[in-house]
Image 1 (cartoon, rainbow, N blue to C red):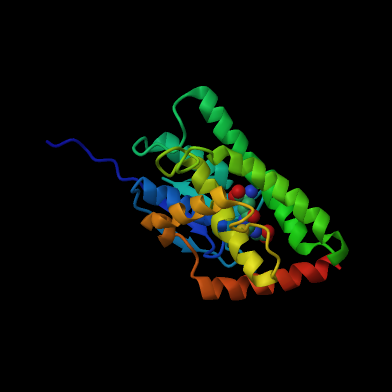
Image 2: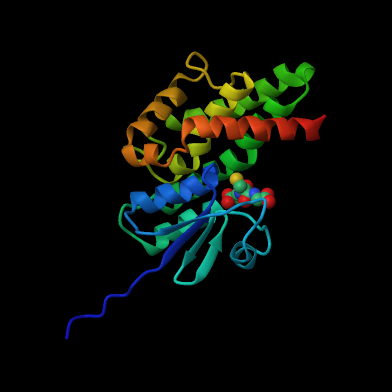
Length: 227
Ligand SMILES: N[C@@H](CCC(=O)N[C@@H](CS)C(=O)NCC(=O)O)C(=O)O
């Protein structure tokens, strides 16, 4: 009698345009974990989405053997704990803590600040742009002397920073406000190029034309609310 092979059932509930669900897709691909992808319609959330994430009612949601896990940073850690090959977080506890710190910095500080500078009134633009640049420069300093945030391979922080790599880049193209440019952020721009030289990272990019149309719509709606 052969040993029983445990069948893993992995499902990702996401939205094609969401950098948060793209993070999970990328992590699963880095680790070569087969999964079923379920596209959600956020204007008509499914019963399963509401059941699996009753608190935030958001995607992404990873369902592993029937157990739902929510919040992209937490899902990434879960994936790294369950599937040990191709580790995403460093082994050293201090380095792990630092990595978690910078991931939170991206989501809580950098994104909020960049979005504010896209949405603010014209007269506040210079000030908000400068605030966003200070935060991005701080993040960029984490790349000094390294190919990726995680070292020589794509790791946890690179995956989290996908929002910087494609989302900010594309929003700035739609709204015509340049925050990340070659001259101001040469190291960050090199990282973006290298990140998308990695084929599985490229595979996890939302299709550009469709995404630009989507961002334009979202931006117009957000600007109306902000008036
Ligand atoms: N902090 C969450 C953010 C996820 C998030 O913002 N998801 C958005 C889509 S990009 C969502 O599901 N929104 C649904 C809603 O706001 O109703 C994470 O990291 O997973």
